[in-house]
Image 1 (cartoon, rainbow, N blue to C red):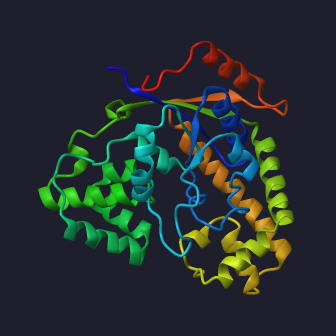
Image 2 (image 1 turned 135 degrees about the horizontal axis):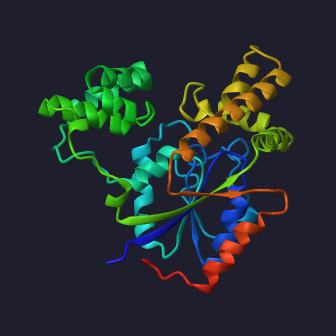
Length: 310
């Protein structure tokens, strides 16, 4: 039995994923699933580069504005909301740069076959909540170094699961057979645009300038005035935390903008490292002529129509 195919446009911020995904979805009848850890929050539009009303009119969009910015939103929350769309949509198109979300959708929900214990799991989740993800990951590194080397500190759900299995069985989860992408009920066809590093950084700088012109400062102030705590998960997003520091008088507005650009460039570098390691992704050369190679690929796909579930 053939596995259902899931399409995706991934890669670093400001690389042009939205434009390509819309072209793809329009041509092939796809529906877009947001795969961005900040675009899930309501009221956070400018700083997250959320699709505009005009862009959303070109293809159905899902998983935007599904969380209150006052509340936390986990990888597990995203997986729970996204999986029904993967099953039900004829042509799902993932769009975003949150690698942990892609990983969560690509691998089976549970790590290992050991039955869980809610009390044990909550105890480890409390460590992450009170001491931070790095402290939780340090526990795993001490007790199960191979698993710690494989799991990112921000992948809290799987770090907790690894610690839970070790406590319940006395054996590290790294000694068990781990799920792979081949175990997924889906086949992921993934694309990313490969910009020269200096051009990508220039695109990031221009995007930040455009966000400021569009009213990012006012958006952050409105969220603060609406009662969103400064330490909320949502307010740790790029652009939001720097402007909050500016509001507190810790830096000037030009300094905050420069810091947003620098941190966004650093984030893009980390995204590139993450996605380069995923051998499923097809990297395509990008340029300023609206990506003709992608259009050729889309045209080829049109000649071989996608059948739902294949």
